[in-house]
Length: 126
Image (cartoon, rainbow, N blue to C red; front, side, top):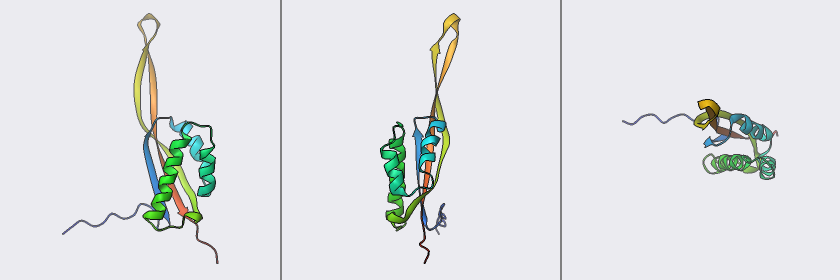
């Protein structure tokens, strides 16, 4: 008398990690996400470690989380993992303001983003 188990959102040879409320614009975050798409996870981690972008530390944490999910939850081999997808979405925006001349009000918009990373285990061709 229980509900059916939810089906997996990713394939059997994939694992996923999602980070929400990253304090940067989606456009800036997408530059870092594009840097790791399609790469092996070791190379992607190296690129993120030595990147000069501020948000690259948070992207590296999300990638490490996806690797840990693949290893612990789905029993995938870490050495064969590739970043299959890395995509960015909008999140909330904080609205702030600053007084301007002649009684006007200048809006300051502080955007937040979310990041989703999927890693896939490549099957060896025999």
